[in-house]
Length: 206
Length: 157
Image 1 (cartoon, chains in turn red, green):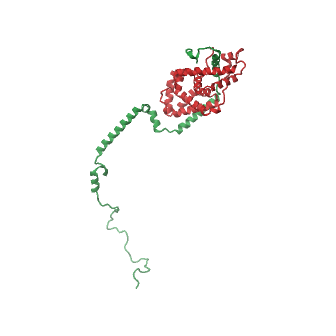
Image 2: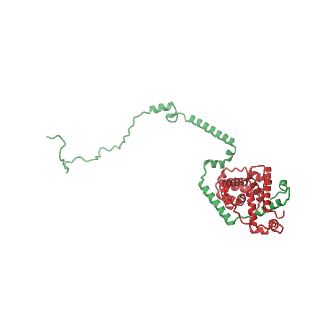
Image 3: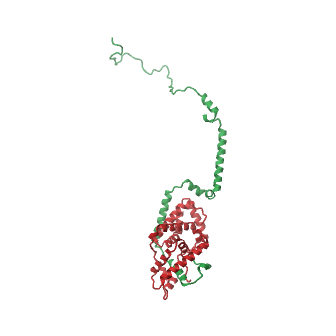
């Protein structure tokens, strides 16, 4: 697909970031709060992205991001480096988000971030709004709302893999480590989640 | 990023599939306000500092950080504890042997006997320095005293 590179997806520079993270984690474990600040700077965007896409609510995402980092700081003395700090942090974020949503099951509302103005320069945007496109008649915000609703109708397990893979660009292997499942399970969840979303969106566009 | 080798996910190029990918792609343009993100980061850092100042590290945390192998491999930890225990026992026994009979009444029969023999008489009187004989502390009675007795303490006649 032309121009299918997601602008907000960052590749995980795993090999390059490992020594840095190790050093920062070690210093944080020894009580250096500034080292932890650097970890917050480094991973804040990714964790916010995960919690935002999981909840489709920016206020909840902000609260959750805050809780995730504070929880990580509190649990840092028990982090033994069996996995990378990044995987460990993501695991905390996924668990926190799932628990948070279970608690607030009946009070789900959408509260979405605005689209960046750069979207108008994107090829995909032009394709979707071109003449003959089924989405031509829809406003962008309407479409955004529908997509987020469809996302929220997925189960927690399925939404987690869709968000991590399709929106954040995390490879299957990394997702498997975070959710503590096999790579095959991750792939099948992804397949099922996409099918479910396609069905829902197709119904909407009829 | 979509992986080309992912057979399961790219079996069909059906329009719904393409559309979904396009929508996910556009979702990437949903960006949070910078000011809100900065405030959020500041809140996190403030909370972290509060937690840090509240949590004085206890002994177990310090041990966990400084000797993580002890907790990661419990059998080695238990073995190390046993070695420490055995060393302390050995050290305690050898110290007792060296000190036998040299301490107070708890060290053995000899000690008790010694405590029994030491039965001198002690008083808590204070000894004052002896003054030379030529020195008189109080002058003798002169007879020309302005103080006169007003009565006698003897039996009445």
